[in-house]
Length: 109
Image (cartoon, rainbow, N blue to C red; front, side, top):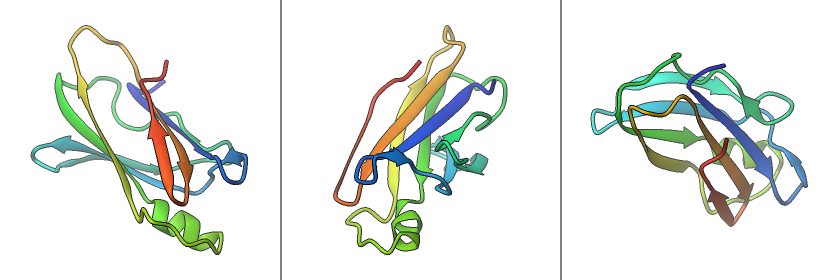
C-alpha cells in the first residue's frame, strides 16, 4: 500500500466517484509527486511513494471534469486538500465526500 491513499464518494449519486483525476503535490514548491485516476470504487490505493518526508502536501481533485462528464454543473472545478505529514506516521488516507455544491474530508485510516 502506498503512503498516501484516497477515496472519492459522490454524495449526490450515492456511489463512488470513478474517473476523478488526482494529483499529489509538495507545498510550497508545488512539485508534482504523483498522479492518478480513481478506479471504479472511487479509490486510488497507490498515490505516491512508499514514504514521504515530513512536511506539507496537497491533493488536487479534478472535480469539474468529473461533474462535466456526468452532465452536472458544479461550483467547485477543483478541490484541493492541504495536509501535514509527520515523521511518526506510516500511512495517510485522505477521503473526499463530494457533491456539486459542497464537499467534506477527514483524516481517514
